[in-house]
Image (cartoon, rainbow, N blue to C red):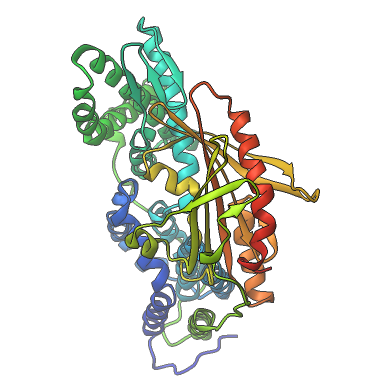
Length: 516
């Protein structure tokens, strides 16, 4: 049985109206998405991906016209899922949930408009937009420093194979007479992310068995890593021949379109190799957009306003209202003491208080903070930083040190977690990071004080943020960080003991400044 409302009202107008409401509901997440494209080089290709997706739809225009089927109620289910992701993202400031939810909602709208047959034609252009969505900052940072170390190790292996006597310590390649630092820009992410989308397109355009297309796409990762490692090794060779002044110029020149072109040529060579042992076609004959055959319509398309499309519009309206309500809800603000009065004397530690630049304070978005250098009579020093956030909605949340460390020129050479006991026997877990910059080394401990919990994992921190926002109407919390330099010739275990001694004194004091 077919149910229609207002038979004279075209269904496509309902679709366009629902699309407008969808954009309004996800506007904050989409603005943040474009901001990441603009600010981060590794995501700059994102501006082109929606255009490519639209072009893919244009290539399928004939199939789109003939694949219109009966609307499917499963689209409403996808829209409900998208609405839940929208609320999750608004509450926890995880924009990834909002942005992926936007694509889920697009698929849901297509189902409500033209059914499963239309979705089969549009699914690939919609899914392609996943490559335009940036990863969370702290995930980016974890991938970046691991790729830095991997590229450094492979680059050293290449140099040793070429007969160079080199030593690798963290991200520093030591040639004896000079040292080469592998900085964050050398991680290869600025090539990897764009090449993943290019590799996907090449696999899509390659008319071969599925296993060869998957192989072509997956091979983008090792190709990028190996090419980046060769770039680092070649830079080391040039520095040895012509001096350190050539490094920056060569890196800036070679890290751009040349690396990108080399990786694409390797992918083309991979296709040539596959063809040599399969169908023996010319490489230019196997890189073209395939003609998409129309899909047999799933039922009779509806011309008038359909109840499923009307329900989809209603669900989107509720999601929009829910996002506004969550964003405008007044949170509970527990009583606390300002961190400006945090004690500068803790046991045998005495502090000299410091401050951040106004621009940095505004960028970090916290409500209150303390930054101080604590010293003991024996010369031990610990830099202590606590940033308190009264609310962690709308993207205002603690910046993980894994994100901030590379911005200061430091490189993460080791990252793990460690446990120790406080003075009262309470177990304490923190994230432990060893960072290097040139010949300097520091040890960093950090964790999140979140409404009575001490959390050493960004993912769990976000989960409890979502849970407490719903059950306690609170998203306040703090990032706590302690840093101590590792002196030349000193074992990092000594720095561990130093920081742990300080934390045993500092943590019991935090309760009045960061409420439970």
